[in-house]
Amino acid sequence: MAERGRVGEPEREQARHWEHPGLPGVDLLRARYVRHTFSRHVHGGYVIAGIVGGVEGIGVPGGPLRAGPGEVVLINPETPHSAYAGAAGGWNYRVLYPEADVVAAVAAETTALRGTPVFNATVLPDPDAVRMIADVHRAAERDNALAADTFMRMVVARLLARHGAAPAAPGGGPAAGPGAAALARDLLAARLADPPSLAELAEQTGTGTFALLRAFRTAYGLPPHAWLTGERVRAARRLLEAGATPADTAATVGFADQPHLNRHFTRIVGVPPGAYQRERKNVQDRPGGAA
Image (cartoon, rainbow, N blue to C red; front, side):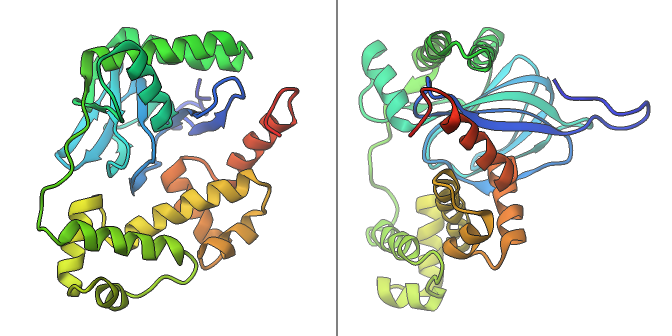
């Protein structure tokens, strides 16, 4: 639980972003945020959050939403979103970040859904699911891997059964748009530290700059520069997990310096790079942890 300051002071923000070796492919976040905001970003996997206090504001393509105690927030892979305090006092929640193949495996075993399923709701009332998400966290914190894995699969199966749907069929938009956007994305991913300019991207994809901007935003929900920042943070997570220093990581992925890495990393992941790396190292140093 969040610590409280002296009378008249706001509650202190606290966050722990970590993983348990008994839950492969699932990150955990337990946090109390008051002033912190998550900038618009995407995840390669899912976000499954249970609100236990306060109100979270969520910015998604369909418009802003709010989630309060007893409600679950579901974000599908590669869906651009932001998060912020939805009311004075912020919000308190527990989050599961399962990778796409984890959810797909549960879906294949418990539903008729195949491939990478999607949730057809973003905010929904489900106090039992919120309690189950909290059970995953409590079991992991007590080092009960069997219970944590069991609760995780149970809550994912519950949410898929009630709110899961088949992935949308590919297509839509201008015929050349998705191809140009995908090529631009690949060019940016290949040059994180020295990205091409918008004019270069347009030239290499055979489009105009404004046409490319429209196609990229349609395909990925973000303009190229914002997508690049998120991809740099993803690469930074991998480097930090491998033991690189935050300063070296910042240079490798293309941030101007470590403060720039700190700012963007915290706005997307929810904790600073140093705290993120310490949690990963704690897992690796434990008996039975990652090699």
